[in-house]
Amino acid sequence: MISRHKIVSICIKTLFLASTLSLAAKPAYGFIPLPNLDILSTLSYVQALLMKVGPLLSAVLFVTAGIFYAIGQFFPSYKRASLHGMSIDMIIGAIVVAALSVASTGLAAASTNLLSNITSNSL
Image 1 (spheres, one colour):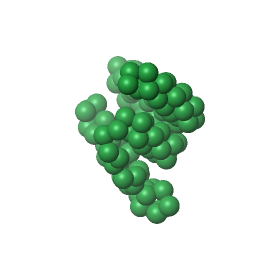
Image 2 (spheres, one colour; image 1 turned 180 degrees about the vertical axis):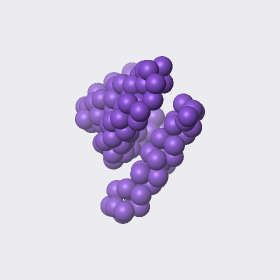
Image 3 (cartoon, rainbow, N blue to C red; image 1 turned 45 degrees about the vertical axis):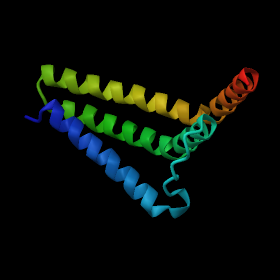
């Protein structure tokens, strides 16, 4: 029997490998250089990172959730419930990542506007 820790470890390794291969295959989407410690540039860095890695991560989570659900069909009921629970958790995570990826531009603009108002009023 495969332990839950082993399945999660394989899933994390697969996600890392898929993101590494995707970023290496598309040099236009290469790694984003780390900005300085300015909060506005850090927010734009996070937004750019979410826009590039978010859709890939969401798709990988959906696929691995389907794989976990299918694997769960071969195990007894107590293990099946555990794997189905993990697959539902991954689907929820994929939906959250997809929503953040879509909304990252609007969230970054709103937070940048808010932070620029706060910093200009405090000086």
